[in-house]
Image 1 (cartoon, helix red, strand yellow):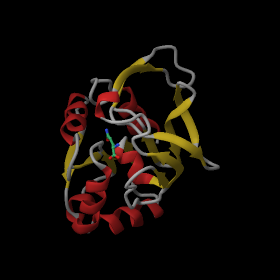
Image 2 (tube, rainbow, N blue to C red):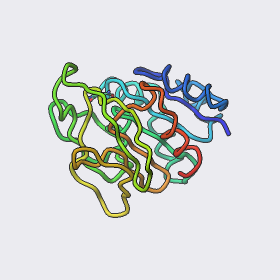
Image 3 (cartoon, rainbow, N blue to C red):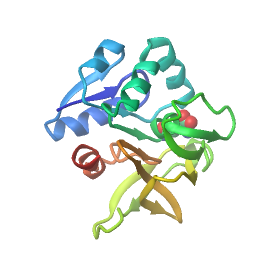
Image 4 (cartoon, rainbow, N blue to C red):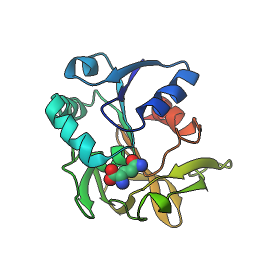
Length: 188
Ligand code: GLN
């Protein structure tokens, strides 16, 4: 299996390093040709408005949507990556999104960069808690039918799955927590 990490902007290096520690074959995805070589894709955190523009100008936008529709591209989106997958985004300067995952997210719902925080979360049914970081994180405010909540924090969904799409409002790659990547690679 080859995992693509969208490497247009944001914290793709942290995703690559966690995947490397798991001995996963990786391709940095910047062009439609790169995308052809991958079985799965991670859309990292960063600045969703910037990544949105770069997805369009690189020609990746349509290719990603086509493969998701054909169910040949499981995607894990973290933070800005989740925002880009979401059907609806609220908040100031909401970017254009791929509209693939049936959730509404409120961008920058916790405030600015200095309101970022680390927190322990627990996956549903798990006994062990995981260290993750919420960095200018979005909040998932509405969930469509067919979207499964895999973890909550403070009463809010923070990890959701719909078919082959997995979305997290937090970063586990920043805290060096491999469990969410394992979940994506094993179960989606
Ligand atoms: N709030 C940022 C955005 O809208 C995402 C932050 C992040 O990815 N850590 O792009």
